Amino acid sequence: MRIVLVGPPGAGKGTQATRLAETLHIPHISTGDLFRANISQQTELGKLAKSYMDAGNLVPDEVTIAMAKDRMEQPDAEGGFLLDGFPRNVSQAEALDELLETEDMGLDAVLDLEAPEEEVVKRIAGRRVCRNNSAHVFHVTYTPPKQEGVCDVCGGELYQRDDDSEETVRKRLEVYHTQTEPIIDYYKAQGLVVTISAMGPVDEVTGRALEALKREK
Image (cartoon, rainbow, N blue to C red; front, side):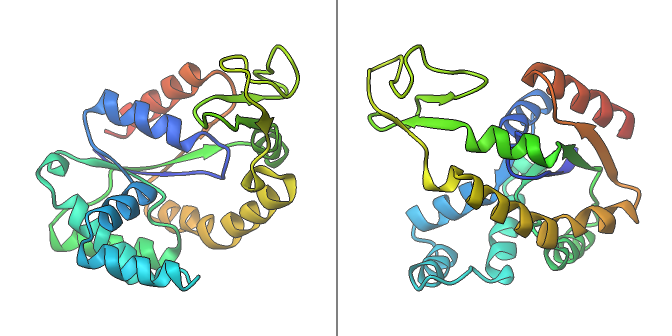
C-alpha cells in the first residue's frame, strides 16, 4: 500500500507510523529521517538542505520533494510506503501526485489522525524529559514520575523542553492548520481520505487504522 499519514502535532503520528509500517511490511518514510540521512551522508541534497538550515531558512519544497523521490525509488519501497510529514502542504501534494503519475502509480489512502486541539496541547505541554537521558520521558497527567521533577529511572532532573511549552505547541498547531490541513481537502476531492480518532490506547488506535486501511484495499 502507498499511504500518506496526516494529523496535528501530538496526535501520535510517529508511533502509529512505525507500527503500521511494520505490520504492513512497508518502509516508514518520515521527513525528519530523510533530512538526517541526507545530511549525515553528505549527499548533494543533504548539503543543499543544510545550507538553508544553517542560514536559518526553511528548506525549499523542491529539495524536500527531491529527497522523497529518491527514497521512494529505493528497492524496499517497490511494494509501497508510508509517508509521514510529507507532503506538508498542497504544493508538495501536487508534486507527489505528479511523481506517482510518472511511475504509473497512485496513493491507496490518506490516513487522517484526528484529535481535539485541547487534548493535543495537553499531551505535548505535559511532557517532561530527563536531562540525563532524553529517552526517559514522563507526562504530568498520563505517566507521572513517582517523585515530581525526578526521573524514575536514573534520578535525573525532569524538565519541559522549549518545543513543548503551551505557547510553542499552539504556534505549531497554527502552522498545521494553515499549511498542512488543506491537503486533507485536496485528497478528499480524490476520495482518498480515511479519518480515524487518535484518542485512546495506542493499540486501539493502531487497530482502528488497520481496519480502516483494510477497507481501502
